[in-house]
Image 1: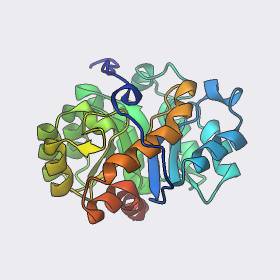
Image 2: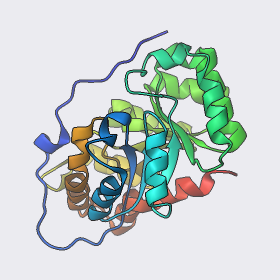
Image 3: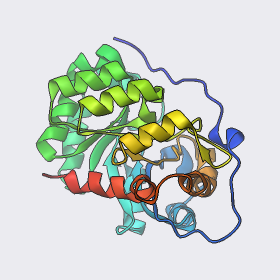
Image 4: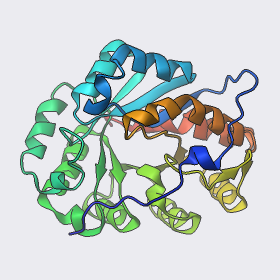
Amino acid sequence: MTFYRYPIIVLWLLAAPVALAGPETLAIVDVHIHYSHDAWQSLPASEAVSMLRRSNLSKAFVSSSGDDGTLSLLAEAPDFIVPVLRPYRKRGELSTWLNDDTVPDMLRERLKSGVYAGIGEFHAFGDDVELPVVRQVIELAREHGLFLHAHSDADAVRRIFRHDPDALVLWAHAGFEGPGVIAELLARYENLWADLAFRSEHATDGAVDPAWRELFERFPDRFLLGTDTNTPERWYYVEDYAAWCRQWLRDLPEQVRQAIAHGNAERLLATVGR
């Protein structure tokens, strides 16, 4: 078993200038929003939804520690919020959830509502996927036709598909892997999507990096966008992140741009419940 790991990276905001001038109409779906308990008091649900709407998002995928945060946003904007069920009751359970036998029952109870599109974002690396709790989460997603939002390394992704070859997996941060590893896994697993949350190396000054351009054009239907509001402070980056994405997406062919901005998220949602 391995424990929680989070790479130390430079915030995209420091690495990527944002073009804020001029109107932008490109629809964007942000698939990596958290509204966890430490944000509820300083940012009420109505204000959080307003902040997301000001970013000109068409939808936001939300998971929270605990799940009541997600449900409060859903109540504010049921046409806009896509609820995803996180296996954490509070922040700080990123490594302990793996051995918490009460987690599967908690998820089963919440899933009775039928409102969720996925399970996650959860953190599991390498042979963590062999643990009984993680195995049950994979099975619950299969039973309910939901996607798994996995903050995982490449080894864990392979293990998820080994346990369920038909799993739907949204790979958080594209595993913080490079284009070569990402391409290998996308080619191997047709039900694998990758979000670009907390990544900035794929574009500089509005220009897409050549290796990433090749990756986006080879797999135009597999990448999605996300801010990752993993702390309350990152809520204030949502609008700038959307503007920055619109900037570098202009450097891609129209079909690829539309797919990454919103089309792939819509297609992922269309697979849920099948």
